[in-house]
Amino acid sequence: MTTSLKLKERLAVELLEYEVAEKQLTTDQAIALSETRVVTTRRAWAPNVFEVTAGPIVGALRVGSDLELRVSPKLPVRRVVYLLAHAAGLASWDDRLLSLDDDATIDVALATAFTVAAERALSRGPGSGYFTVEAELQMVRGRLDSNRQRRRFGFPLPVATVYDEYGTDIAENQLLAGAILLLERLPSISVHLRRRLRRLGQLLEGVRPAARHESGLPVHFTRLNEHYRPAVALARVVIEGSSFDVPTGRRSVTGFTVNMHKLFEQFLQVTLSEAVRRRGLGRLHSQRPDHLDQGRLARIVPDLTWIVGRAPLTVIDAKYKTLEEGRPSDDDLYQVIAYCVALGARQAYLVHATAPAVPVEMIVGSAGIIVHIAGLDLGSPLDQLHFEIEALADSIVSELALSAAV
Image (cartoon, rainbow, N blue to C red):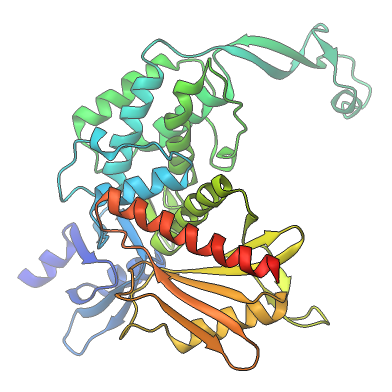
């Protein structure tokens, strides 16, 4: 009877990234956890015991009213926020700005980072500018929206109009307001942080919050709104978070999660693009689709493709996993070799989330395809991580130069 009562209380399930652990759960709780798609569950031999397996998705979720799930990254949470900021285009982000506990969750860390950036952006008050308004009025203002007016089936009023207005309801403020609205609903943030977010929301009173599908609202940065850039970038990260109020079965899920596989790929794309752009050779394309066969039946989507002119010369595949015995898996090798064969490229890079002890170069048979095994130690000090990125960019550029000369 005592065990049954305990199982009905709020249960916190805590795991490390990729950890497998046995947890005491009811069948209903195990199903609810699986439905989040953050972990998988499998019944163990003991009664009410399930084997819970975490993957590359980290973060904190509240599932329904009686269950909490927390998957901690192997990297320090401060470094994960740095990767998120860098992947969002904030190359100058300084993680020393954050005051975080070592055991802080991703959602709390992101909320803290955004709050600091938004407070700086709004320290001189919300920015203003011209924005377009579509409205139905009793009189014509601005210009008549003929397409919308025709859909009124002959009714003259109200009139569908489009006009420009000057005020604070501009894209950058809408993105900040949308992020604030989502973060305020997180159950794990402190009362103090919630109060700071509420004050920011009050500063943006009258601004329409950006919706989930509007994370890509275009913002043109000038010297007048450059101070908004960090807050806007982090607001996009918040709004794109796929785990805010996601229905799962009969329960709702509130929280924030990060797919470390995708984050590593985005981080690699942004950092390498910038590093190679400075060297002035080629252009990086992310998730550029193509086909393996001439009949265009087998689709391929390399993580990153370097193109010089119109010729794909190098493919780069991001692998958020460690090297086993200093070598990549056969499946990963087959994958990048297939990309090279299909695209006519002679070079490939498998970039892992841990740096190999010694750089490895593999030459594939008579095809002459060279696969470089590289890596970045994401947990190293920032100066060391930046050095590794520049070294990787130097290696790619030098190989590209040789390939282009052939």
